[in-house]
Image 1: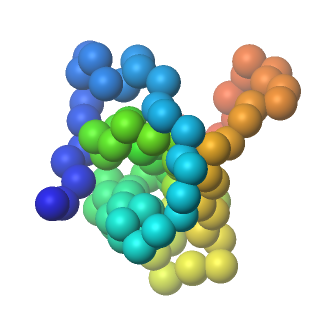
Image 2: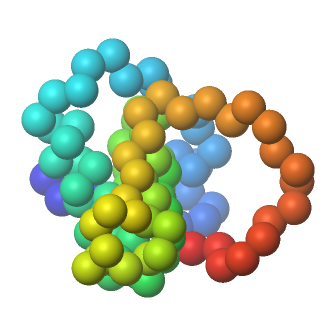
Length: 92
């Protein structure tokens, strides 16, 4: 089933995703779909909840360019270690 981009104020956007316990084909396909969504929306990144998934995963392309695959990052069970509270640059 294709992922659907959820928009604010959808309640799923406030939910904490479940930890990923296994990286399988289904999760890999979901990450690919999430990257497709950011390129279609001209964004830089997407959290799993924004794609309607209930897991802890984010995808990022630091350049926002589908042709630059070496700028892609898929993070499973990411943890924020530090935050300045300030955002710099483009918000995707």
